[in-house]
Image (cartoon, rainbow, N blue to C red):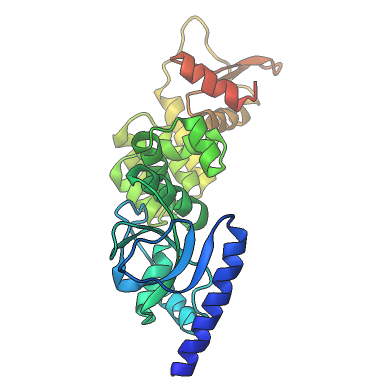
Length: 305
């Protein structure tokens, strides 16, 4: 048993040196760090697991137990392939920045020490790094991603365009995720638990009241409706709520169904109610409303103007 542990330690040491060469200016000590002194930042070292605290800013609220057990079995055989990232709070205590799945699985595997990349970070940097690392590397559900985006905006004082750059996503993608947080809790929970997809949720967002959203949502779940069918239900609901204009009565034409589909999808993409009108000759107009200069700038960015 001891020989196996020694071979694992050797593998981890070699791997640490490889990672160190990729991280400019980093040093790999190749041994367990003493708890009597503060370590230099930008080093990779083996740290006692019982000296590491979990990250209070961890955005992920649920870890699949079966997946953790599989990772723990892999760690028993292969060791830690990628070090976790920590900051040092004092001589005896570290705090996770990222890598909680590896940390939890290592504890399950019975490891006493774990390779870690030591960084310097204040509380806001901790939050930002943890959120971004999770968004980029973990399979978060849509609600966890939306909540992470919202926390980056509010707690890290980022603007939407800055957020898009940080997480490598288009602003429209960020906006679509943030809109999910406007849905009632029941629908958010269903999306989180994969009862419905993001396509279902984006269609439901376009319904004007929470009561109607919940009614359609219940029908979606009961009948296991497709995204296309939900879009059709939402479109019909919107049409039923429209009051006829006595001065400009719209005539039914062959383009109506296609136009309504385009209208629904454009509304989802732009994050605002888009109006598409066309006559029997196929001529018409698209109206994109905005309520502020910031809203106009956001729409112009989507249009790459």
